[in-house]
Image (cartoon, rainbow, N blue to C red):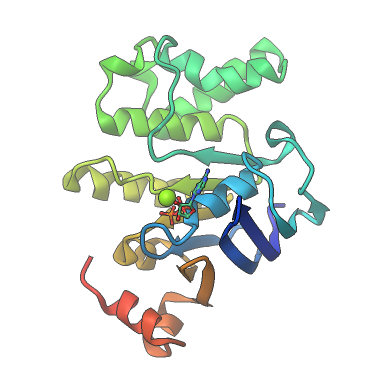
Length: 238
Ligand code: ADP
Ligand code: MG
């Protein structure tokens, strides 16, 4: 199962509040796109869900368990970063195996998981390479592979296509779609590109300045935008 509940989640950095109480209910297997302009708090919210930063108020639940005090490694959540954040000195294989090695998984299980992820992402030919010997698209796939091997209940993607050129962007987007179809893992996908969001997601969460403007299916947002901001955002060219 991969259900996620955000209940009035707040985040302050010092005196400044950047999330003003975000609430959201995500069902198992849903693909949610989190959209909104740069600086509205999307990455901050993902980091809170992943446990990389702690909430200033409110509650985060995964599968009914309150996560507020749970360490990142003990959350059934895997995050794919915009910058890939690969370990430069490790091979592709070791990058993907690392979190399982840290968790002291049996060697055979690690090999099996890495093989499966490499197969899903077409990375078999590159397993012995270092990140610097890979293209941007390949590095992005390794970053996804690292998330897949953990077999999480929830995937968090932070603008995974933003460092790719336009042609590759379409290709990797289709791969993310195929991945979701194949594994059915609950996904929270951050993007500032509303077209990307409309194509991928079951539902969109439109954020603006640290709060949620509207949550709905692509059709609902298109047909009945709740605010002028939503209308402008959904209608705007990418
Ligand atoms: P987005 O991902 O939507 O572009 P972010 O979540 O990165 O937005 O940032 C939201 C706001 O929080 C921004 O104003 C940003 O400057 C601020 N912020 C993010 N991280 C920190 C931090 N560690 N310390 C202080 N301010 C931060
Ligand atoms: Mg961001």
